[in-house]
Length: 408
Ligand SMILES: [Zn+2]
Image (cartoon, rainbow, N blue to C red; front, top):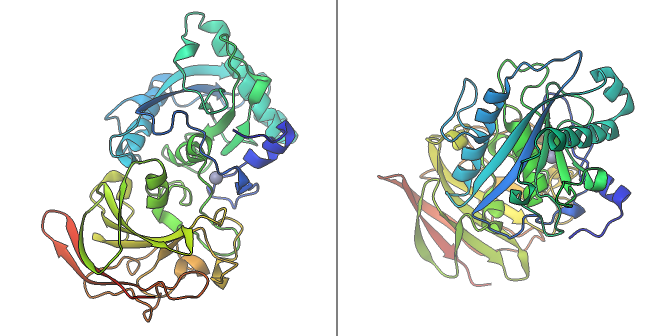
C-alpha cells in the first residue's frame, strides 16, 4: 500500500516510455512495490477504454483492439503475440491476464487541447472515459475486476487513438473515477497501440506500462548515455525491439524458480525454461547473479542477438532502477539495478553503443570468473567467488555449464 499524498503519488507514478523520443518524465522508483493482490494470482482481470479525438478519429476498430489485447492466439503483422498471450508466456502459463475492452469514447476536445494542458488533462480524460463506460454498460460486473493491495482497481487502461501528453505513462487516477460498486481506481495507464511514426501496431507501450502498474517494476532503460538492459527486456527496449521481463522480475512473481548455487556443480538449464540458476551475495541478499538459458525460438525472445546462449545478469535490488544511473561508472555507488554481463567485454549497454549485439550471450568457450572481462566481482569490488565455464549446448534445447564457487 502506498501512503504518499495524492500529489506525491502523481509525481511518483508519472512515467514515460522510450519510444522514438527520449523520455521526458521519469518514474521515481521508490514506488517499486508490487500492487497485485493476491500476489501470484492465477488470473487477473483489468479494463481498457478506447478513446479517440475529433481530429484523430479511431483507425483501429474495437474488435481489432480487443483481439490485440485479449484474444488468445491472435497475431498480426509486426506483432507476433497479443497482450494476454504475452503474460501467459512470460509467466510460464501461471497468469491468465484477461481484459474487458470498451470503446470508443470520443474526447470532447481535439488533441491540441490536451497537449497544451499536459498529462493531467489526459488523466481527467481517462476518468471521463471510464464514467462513459459506466453510463453505457449498466449490466457490467465491476466486482469481477481485480483489486490491488489498497483495495482499488488493479488495472485501468486508456488506449488513445494517438499519442497525447500523458500517453505512454502510468498515473494515479484515484478517486477521479469510482466504479458503481464503490471501488475507486488506483493507478491507470495511458497508452497507444500505434505511435506517430509506426506503420504497424505495437504492444510495447502497454506491456511496459503494465509492468509498472501491475507489478511495480522499475524502468530499466537509461537516460544518462547508456542503454540499460537494452533490447533484451520489456522495461527497457523500444517499440519494436524488446523482450521478456528479466529473471529477477520473473522470480519475484514466482513465474520461474531459482536453483541456488552453493558449491561446485554442473547445472543444466532448459532454454526459455522454468528454472534459473542464482548465486546470492552473502553480505547483501539483494545482490545476485542470475544465469538464464535462452534461445530465440519463441516470439517473446525473437530479438535475442544469438540463436541460443547463457544470459548472465547481475542484479542489485538496493538500486531503484536503471533510468537515472550513470552506468558507465560501474562503481559501488553508480551501477544499474539490472545489468546484463556482456560476454564480449565491451560494456556496450553501459556505454550506450547499442541495445545488444551478437557478442553478449555466453556460448561454449566463454567463461565468467573473477579474472575475465566482465568479471564476477560484487558491486563493492570484492570477489564473489563465482565462476562459470564449460558451457555446452545440449540437444533438446538445454544448456549445461559448470558453476564453481571459490571459498571466500
Ligand atoms: Zn516506464
